[in-house]
Length: 354
Figure 1 (cartoon, rainbow, N blue to C red):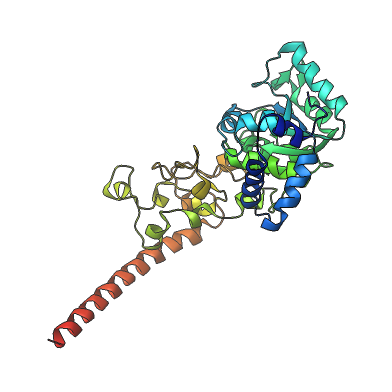
Figure 2: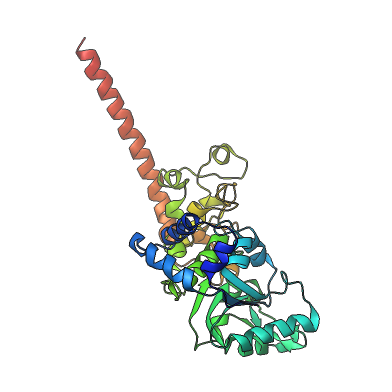
């Protein structure tokens, strides 16, 4: 459980220097688009703050969101749990089970009423019998625990928008967190699973600023979901030139051409995958040779096949993207012709000077 010691006292007791602490604050500010001038104030606020009590509940999910968190690197999961938060309840990570586990949740709820941060992954079945924990339905447990939370973070697409459990025909009548809780600050961190840095970044922002970060029109933090994957993708120049892989093993695929025709949903997907990447910035799906499946968008499971191109699926502005691809071919060909023309003119000019 959370202690009365401040974060500054805890960090100093573990030999963490002031310089290292300020470096963490600077990295957090940069990551969350906070002005650099706020770093000293952020550091002062963090040093005086007590560890944040966190309750994490998992409902209709695959544990992928927790697996993503376990692979976070800034801050690391160890740092996050033992230095900056008090993770008082989490099915997968806690040692307790059965009655002891539920006792930990209830103790945290009462000891930190109105102050604990609630993280939820997985959708919530409205048919109560489909998923229960300790004999309590997911719906009842969420409503009970959310009542005393200061804020809620919906981790993963299932918690944020319903995800796979909500896909047609939705036999469990799955819903998202924000469809049930309307009187608490809620932020969505979608993805299947979400980027680890997005999870830890939002928690770090809440710890340092005392509020959730700015969000877009569907509740996602702008610092991670404010840009289109397609616009940040290193394959984008090939798209603009009309160069597309036709199969996963053709010459275009081997040359790293755009995967749009193979079903890549990056033109309609907002996330930080292309520049934050996974596994400490090593790679992301498109770099690995597979198109984006649009997992951070609402109802992505019901928007056509994974390998259908955007116009063939149901991604809203798909026809415009299809037209853009056609224009890309024309523009690419025109650019190549223009380059050849300039080359020939330069050669002619050189020869004329002989």
